[in-house]
Image (cartoon, rainbow, N blue to C red):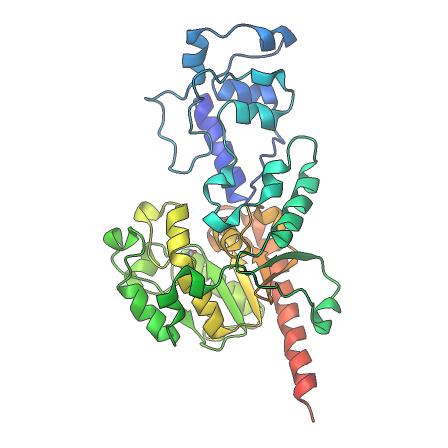
Length: 375
Ligand code: URA
Ligand code: URA
């Protein structure tokens, strides 16, 4: 396999894990530099050697090389004059940035999602420190709507003594899309989505997939986008991943009819590629309105796109799991996407832990309201 292929495959694996940071646990910086086309820098003097046009040509991703996927992180060619060894840094992140590489999640950040700390979290910080900084910064981000965020934790929730995460919910439907904010029922949303032209996906999609389930569900589950079978049937989570997820729900004593199931995108991207930032941005008012109408007790975000869209963060799944985030005050738990579990069995156990956590929060919420309504 060509070096660039190897690197791309490695980065794709990291992305599937939901990592926004690049953790080079099995590759040395020299390996990676070779893969992106840089000459070996095994000797310290290599850093100060002059770069020839041939070096630059070797460094630039070759036009006839294997096509990178649309959001592949290694794509942008170095700007003229940008050198792999620029800055003579020993920090691989900085080195990769200097080489023109972007962080995998950069392309995802929706317009309101700037997370200052992730940009600020450079080499000096450990990746665990960077994660903490990401979480802190996302919660501290100025509220563009001028609203106070819910910061009071209900007693029943703090009694669980679980690590807290991001406090999200700055974007209101009324500001994002006033027409969507007016839709009175889930059926109205579905109808609106059927004629939606807010992004270009309606042109290639054969059916819309708005979502389905209990309109007053206690648990609302958010995936990424419809797949082939979902598109065919106009229903979410009916393909192989959906079947697996239905079983996972069963393991916490919930049926499809108990919960509400939907996706960030309501139309399938061509070839089932990753959602583009514009598409996520265009489609999110529907998701926000669905959450407003269902008013779930707990939200389960399946996979990176759902988690990052709702929490407005670039942090990866690994960092976001195991914490109680809140979305407009509603506890939100993050887990792996069921498609990821089909590819990697080893994520089934952590997913099981995550859904048990969601169940625990749900039960605590239910018994708290049973207490308050008891005579
Ligand atoms: N994957 C998703 O994210 N959503 C579906 O509805 C099906 C598969
Ligand atoms: N795989 C993941 O890990 N996350 C997604 O959102 C989709 C597929």
